[in-house]
Image 1: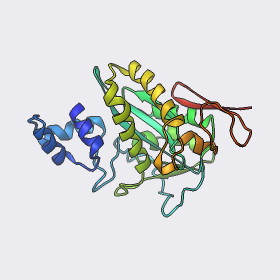
Image 2 (image 1 turned 120 degrees about the horizontal axis):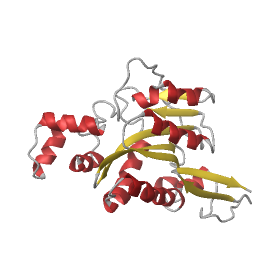
Image 3 (image 1 turned 135 degrees about the vertical axis):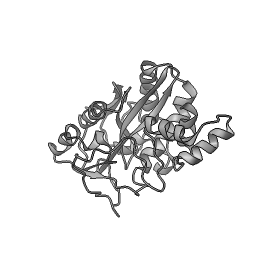
Length: 259
């Protein structure tokens, strides 16, 4: 499963046939049916020719329309996106969910879970909403996101709900890029033993990602600088607008204090 994770993270457009081919090249003789089963267990589905969904849809749940067609993302909290990815551990595996501001690429909250349930997705969302409210929340049509336990959190706050349809392989591209970055810069290097180690390590990494890691697409600024609209280094220093914004991480969420 770890080899499949590495292959899919590098080439998320691969289906089971191509994954099986790469596994064979790596010295893993395995049948395609076995690859399919493992990919389903890991929640992996190629983004081409149809959108990669980390969980199965529930046909009884309400599906919401896609609201982002031809929309220009021009400000923080205009659109938040969320997705789930597989995280390999030495003692098994777990799942990581994150809520991301599309304009700034800032990770607003995240959570780990040993199972693909709704609760850990909802917990991450609630923590993100402690800091701000998005105009639109975008996700795939996985059962975690279509469940009433999740959508009620959004609708009760008058947040518009957008969901990717099948075939829209580029809809969650910002989150797909985040997963590749997190895995290559942290998870694969650290080789966490268990979910506790992963939580501690990712807490440190996401703090670095938001407040220190500059992005070329953001004009060499950090996600936190763009999200909070400041030009200075975001490490608790004063900003040009004379507002002091401090950030800290606790239980996987971005907290802000303005004084």
